[in-house]
Image 1 (cartoon, one colour):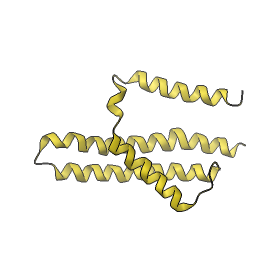
Image 2: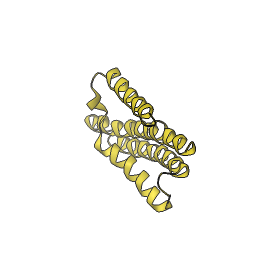
Image 3: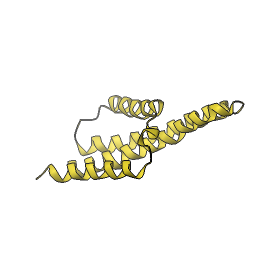
Length: 121
């Protein structure tokens, strides 16, 4: 019973989010994923956080949101650099917006619940 409620909660979040979208694959952007996951993972390695503690998940939350902001700035710089080519603005805007989305999703819908679970052990 200890693992059933979290599994159901995760399933409900993912399923309802996917059902709310017309095409969930539109929200998959490899450069954005690499920016958020890479910066978060690198920062965690650099900090030397102990895995699966409340402090670790607090750092995951903070680093993922921060990397989402950095990715947004990278996307805006790419967008401003391609103002002469209107076709290149769309992919750059996708990087800008999706990195923020990924950072918030990881921070608030993965790391924060895991932090609460680690605190309640």
